[in-house]
Image (cartoon, rainbow, N blue to C red; front, side, top):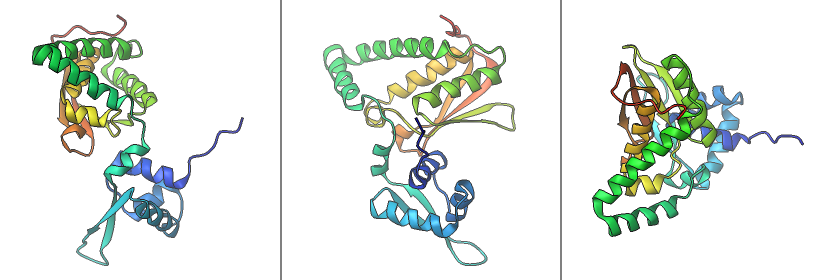
Length: 218
């Protein structure tokens, strides 16, 4: 069976999801097609309501445009059980109150740590981070990993699998951060979050041992 190559329009959506805002020139270099070809695809995506543009003024030369995804474009990416999660969480809060919801999130953190931790077994922090990103990538979360100048690491996630549920219940994001910390065995701090309106979720990972049990392999 021949594997179908992603279309240029799909690749543009993926690039904008991963990088937030890009110019025609940046998209052209990333895709290996001409700027004219990129503009044609962008025109179709704008017509379909999936992409918008804003003007980028430069000190020299003609102004350029930055392209970014619209809220409608979220439906083009993998999301899992969003509506079901919202209904269940609302029912839990109504039946058990905030304490019951907090207890459920603690269980969710534990389950996530165990599930992801089975794949994250490396001895060094860098290896564990790469293994974690590989696992998240297979789920469709579009992670990227970057070493920062102060020696810490940045994990950036471009696609939330349950965006509406996370906006309604931000504690879901707290559970993810807690699971990362359990797996990696170091301090993890969430700096930005799609649930609160940011373009992506960014986690700062600091190579200082934290007093948490590592869940890998449990």
